Amino acid sequence: MKIIAIHGIQGTNRVWLALAERLSRHCTFILPNLPGRGNGTPYTQADMTLASFADVIENTVQQYINDDEPYCLAGWSMGVSVALKFVARRRVAPPQKLMLLSGVPDISKVSWFAQRTDSGLLNEIREREQRLNLLAAAEHQAIMWTWQAIANTSLAQECASVTMPCLILTGEKDEDSPLPQVSSFRQLIPGSTLRTIANAGHSILTENTETVSTELAEFLNLE
Image (cartoon, rainbow, N blue to C red):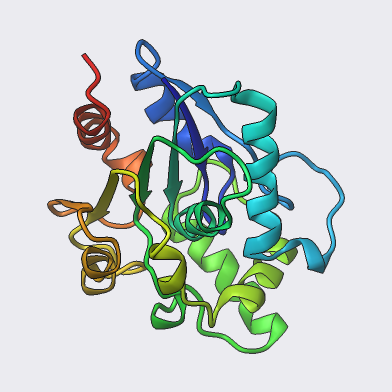
């Protein structure tokens, strides 16, 4: 089973490595880096949008998924928003299953960053990087431009495009994507499955890897 997995606003594809290793007997993880993250490729402010990030996922599908080959799509944190934007476009083959981890349907209702000025936002970005204990962090300029582009975005309309089986997984004590906001996915994506991890925060991929692995294995019917 191939899984295309999308990282969040502030990290890189490395956030998925522990989970990919744990599930390596059953799954092949394909881990693209979004612009401004991990690969050193030049980028501009225009690249820091959900539409641009969805382009990356489309290119990834075209490069790594054969015709009629089933695959799954997973997103963590902002990666959830990118996944929804991608699915709603219907430009390339859709995933067989969708996994939304630690994300929300309406970014305007969360406060990943509160500062308004560039200098204040950059300071807040540094502080959040340390709090989340990221394995590798995105470039601060890229994060700032991304947040400025997406902060008022709702993905409610995109949720209506989700027709495949969908797992929603989140930490009960996630302060970045609070449970009440995550829970609204159940109304927006009928038939979706919401699972929570007790005493877990936002960084479930690295801090609750075993539990996430178990949940994904069950959802994907891995043996």
